[in-house]
Image (cartoon, rainbow, N blue to C red):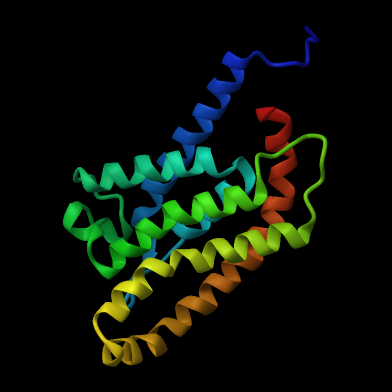
Length: 188
């Protein structure tokens, strides 16, 4: 065995550390939000998309799952210190459920990083944009469930969030381009 090759056990340890570190980062950033109505502005969605594009969907969806479980069991890890199962059934909570799906979608689009390939920026950009868009699916379904009137009232209020997420996407893409090759070296 080449001294540069990692054992399967060592790789699993490194990947587990990435999952735990991402989950801790998601939990820790719950307190970092800009209060606004109807939703707070957060960076947690950026962490999800960034991690999924860098590490892959399996690791990141595992981290998001741990984050959601921590909040569901009462730890104040959601934006503004929110917590509990009841929070997950609100429109705000539906965004959190979207994090899990976004991690899977971005990870599926990006695949696991490989030291043998350089990921094209177009692929990074489209994957990240898809991830940010997927996060809105569950909340929009919940809003539509409230009727056309509710949808018509809330959609204009969501425009600043769309703009903020587009800016986050513009920041995420170069970060992924920088971090993904490092992850490929350390996790393969």
